[in-house]
Structures are given as structure tokens and as C-alpha cells.
Image (tube, rainbow, N blue to C red; front, top):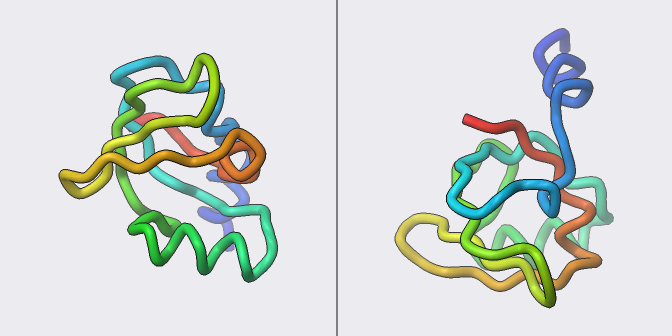
Length: 83
């Protein structure tokens, strides 16, 4: 419980990461549909990834050797901590 609260307060929105920064997903704030969509694409809580591009348009991340494009609205529901 304490760790979950710690991660939420020390996390940031995925779109705030800079290019080539690595992060871990701490929470997905969307509903079950959002969580399922991201899970099926390989992204879930605890997953570590690298930001490729997030300045304009869809957010591009590299996770498990694959590149994943996430719409900005969905990306803003993902909270992360830098690793």
C-alpha cells in the first residue's frame, strides 16, 4: 500500500518524458477498456520502456523491442516514474 501511494505521488504523466528517457508505468488512470487496449499492445503497470518521441502527434515508445504508438489522450492517462 505504501509503495503504491509513493509511486503515485512521485510519478508524472507519460507525455512529460523527454526523448530517450526510460520509465516504468506506475498507474493507468483510464477505465478497463484503456487498460485492456494497452495490455494487448504490451504495456501494463510495472512495464519499463524508452520514450522515442512525444512532442507532437502520437507518443512513440519502445517496449520489449517493439515500437508502440499511443494517442495523446490515452498517453495522458498513463503515470510513470523515471528509471
